[in-house]
Length: 246
Ligand code: BMP
Image (tube, rainbow, N blue to C red; front, side, top):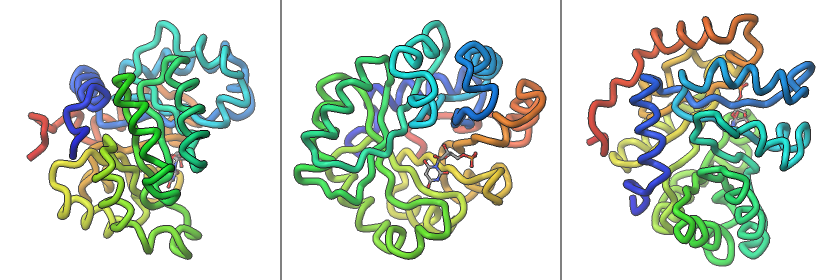
């Protein structure tokens, strides 16, 4: 994968080693966490124990762009912006430009928009800025089976050729993870869906993912710091050894 040793991947892996963790925190605030102060407090408790932190539309709406900048300030990332971009390349690029300027190291974009005048413009910008792009090639909810996941392998091949840094693939469909890993032994794969959505912690790693994206299981825990320690132990910390992985 062209972006394999790109700076985002290196930052993520470096942080994963330091944190001894294959967890990427998905921070989607509800209730009291919509207070910036409480959010900062929670992220401060978790940031040195996770490989990276994913913030998305719920955070952007709760805190606004400048709030997000403040939230990230002084905390260890790398921070991944999950707006699941799915627009024409011109607009995707415009959004990614703003997001990188806020301090994010990578963006998540849908592969289904296609490469030409779609994903390629985001990848091009990321290369210019030394940032990363992760392509959603399948999703974790049941409705993803209706259309999206049927074209997963084609989307992976196309976005790989376009030079994305890695893939977002669902823990709820482990057969897709296994097939993706078989086809692309060297690819960076981040997988959401463990915990609150059903599959046990660690199951996506076993099926071939490099990182598990964990939201509610951590964010809604009464003691997030204890919970993250327990999860790291359960998942075996960072056992990747070297990178590239194979
Ligand atoms: P949780 O662990 O609370 O289910 O959160 C999962 C996170 O991963 C959410 O931020 C969601 O937006 C994201 N996600 C997902 O659940 N399924 C996908 O297919 C793609 C995602 O990005």
